[in-house]
Image (tube, one colour):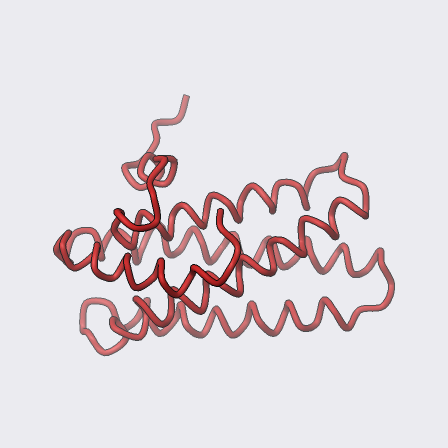
Length: 164
């Protein structure tokens, strides 16, 4: 059995939105996204179930990206330790937006479902990259009190969107 990383364990904690650090909250959203992506990628899923899961995923991703950028990434993009991953994260968010917009332009339902699967692959890459490269830096180099303050900002910005 594969040993879980500290970040994986944190992501599975049942933590309220108002008492956690930003990384914990981001990981909680990541877990919710992965649960929806599993429904989309399930070989047993009907087209209707895929479309329903994608609609939920899309709302969650929009809300998550906006809150993550406003609470964390824009604060980090000018800091030497974080600027590379923060700027990359912001640009990847733009790519996600482009793909999501494209999915809605595809008329054929079968092709649309394929594009939804591709979106999930791109999103999974982004989540892994944040979890392995950005979040450990944040955990190591930003004080817990600061992470909690940023977490409160993230939670406030996320409050308008769907909860994981």
